[in-house]
Length: 92
Image (cartoon, rainbow, N blue to C red):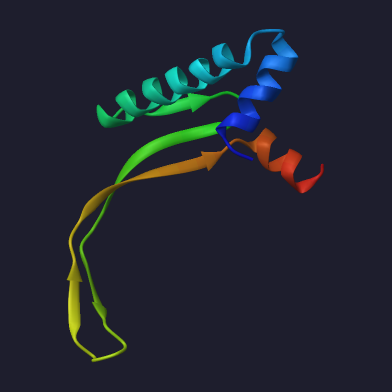
């Protein structure tokens, strides 16, 4: 499922035009991106939590030539599903 598919479902369920639903999704993604960029947590009830975490640098070995490579630290986005979402996925 992609953004177009989601916007079609939203448009059908809310009775709005497809481009309005598509624009809504774009705006939602923009708001989430801006707030994650500021370091804020995003919590959506009954869905989950988006958070920015720091991943420490680590050493890895290239299996082809056994060379040690250092992967620098970086920020990553983590998603933690809510209990309700987990239950729905598990079929409970």
